[in-house]
Image (cartoon, rainbow, N blue to C red; front, side, top):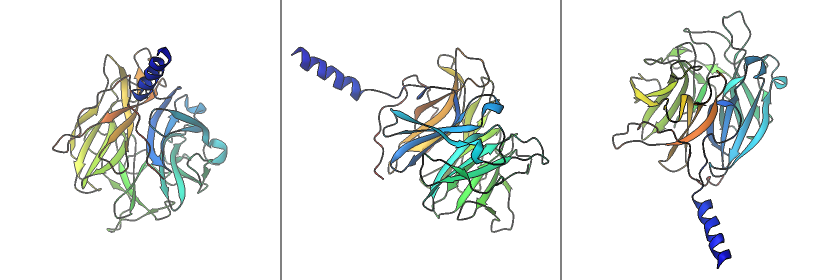
Length: 320
């Protein structure tokens, strides 16, 4: 009987187990969540001094609770033009390949080499190698520093990239092989789509025919970092700010921002993946990756996210 009770207790514990927050150990920020090859994946920035940010790790899970680390899926040695500040990855599967977009070098003007690059691999865990030998976008256009890219595939199969720091956001159209920027139908190449209060970290989500454009506000090194969003009928906007959905909680953490969203395939079920700064920490790079459930109300607006220490319950990954 004692053994039976113990077994029952263990089963009950396992059934109610949650991911906890942070979801894996180490200083990691700017997490890009995705579903790849029948698993959940997160590609974050290794949060450290810029000269130490010369590689990227990735993490995979079959249930959003237990995560496996894949070290150094991308390294400086595989990107000839990168020298420091490799950050804010974006991942997408297309053309039977995995494309990992990243920022590098933190350029401050158009005389410096750096910007947004793209690396490819045959497997989500890499290794990823630079596909171009140069940045895909290496110039400051419309005032937008070429960082924080997000690649969005619309329902018609067209790929768009949203990117930009310094309070400006551009969108571009990508070629079918995702290795070049091509003009829009009106002949323009870079469209500025900056919404009110935008700072950096753009993300696009499509739900029930509406485009949810999301971004980070405030200073990334401070406590007021946060996430806001807009709703539009087109991927081009206009993006009229609705309000904040994620921000610091004096009982949980500060500096909550630079997020992405994982949708459980085939379900109207969403999880926000983001970084935050523990209350015990003040350091610029002391950031951890967390996950919480994200809900929509009956009118299609995003409800404010409640940050937790518990994280989320297990959600089985979809079949390949």
